[in-house]
Length: 223
Image 1: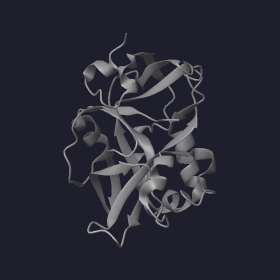
Image 2: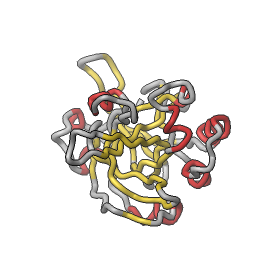
Image 3: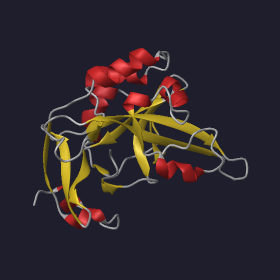
Image 4: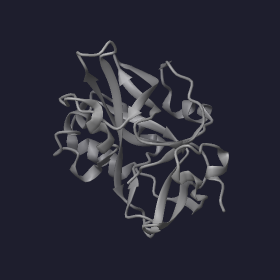
């Protein structure tokens, strides 16, 4: 799973490979991103790639209220075409969620050690994600954009920390993943399988990351 991660750039590295058209946000470093926060993501809308902040925790278009989003921070790659919460977004609204690494905990309850997992290059990357538009007719701000991070079985070198990991896409698959004309579930599944990066570096970090109130560069430093 992926329940906490970080993004601190630099954005220029991702710009070279994603080539988005519009940015309505300037992502700031966030070393302790938690569910329900707004996160930087690349979406495709009106045939344009847009970098914007959207809420982490997908709220399906049919939901009665936004509270369901806190349970929808991850979506299992193996069951996307079957789940009513994700099926529509998997077909029509796929996104790239910006990150530098994610946190995972190992150990027994009350004695869990957090690890930071990142690319061996140290460069920023993207999670394969889904996004959705939810309408609230009772609000002055009726439209909410939200997202979820897709997960898969963990790579062998990190499976001892946790048996699941987020799908981190190779840049060769960015265009296909964002292509709204591609709506075949089989082809989308192949992107997740063939495009997933599976070679990482990882190390233990401070338990300060356990509290979302802590948010500074020391959280991603090895101990």
